[in-house]
Amino acid sequence: EAQVTQNPRYLITVTGKKLTVTCSQNMNHEYMSWYRQDPGLGLRQIYYSMNVEVTDKGDVPEGYKVSRKEKRNFPLILESPSPNQTSLYFCASSSGTSGGAEQYFGPGTRLTVT
Amino acid sequence: GESVGLHLPTLSVQEGDNSIINCAYSNSASDYFIWYKQESGKGPQFIIDIRSNMDKRQGQRVTVLLNKTVKHLSLQIAATQPGDSAVYFCAEKNDYKLSFGAGTTVTVRA
Image (cartoon, rainbow over all chains, first blue to last red):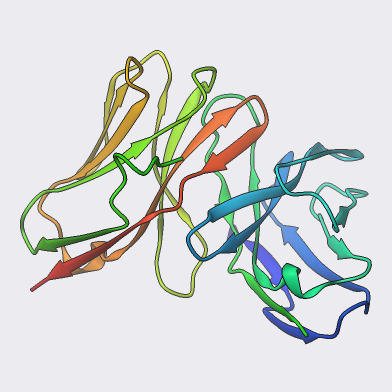
C-alpha cells in the first residue's frame, strides 16, 4: 500500500531534549516536506527536499533540522525543543515539484514540549 | 491562503445541497492551486488542483474555480454528503513552496 509513515505518532518531551521524528514513504517520490499545523494558522511549511541531499527552508524553519540521505526517508530533528514547538506535525511526499503533483500526507505526529 | 474578507472559518450545509468554499490567495506568481480535505485525526488529503492558466476544473462532485483578477479560488461540492464533513484547505504553490490557508470547517446537517 502506498503510504507515508511517521513515528512516533504522539510524543511528550521536555525543553531541551533532542528528538527526531521519522518520516518514510514507499512511493519512490523525489519531493518530501514537513509541515506544522497550529489552530487558526493552517499548515506551515518547515523544510522541504527536492531529492536526496537537496533540502531547503520553508516558511518556519527556525529550531528545526532535516536530512535526506535516502530517497525514502526525511527525518525532522529538533536539537533543543521549546514549548513553542508544541504542535501537530505532518510529513508529505509527491512525485515531483513541477505541476500540481499530488502530495501524500502522513498521519501526523502530535508533539508536546513541556 | 485565505484572507479575512473572503474566508469563512465555518460552513454549515444541509445534506444534499451544494457547498461553496472560498479562498483568497496572496501570491500572483503562484502556478498551481490545490484543495485539500482533512478529516478529524488524519492528514490532509488531496481533492483537486488547478493550474494558474485555467479558470475552471471539474472532478467527481467537485469543481474548482480560479479568478486571477481578484486572486480568488473556490471549491464547489455538489450534493454534499455527511462524509464531506471535514476541514478544507486551499493551498498555493510557487516554485517548490506550498502555502496553506487557515481552513474552513464544513459541517453537513442531516
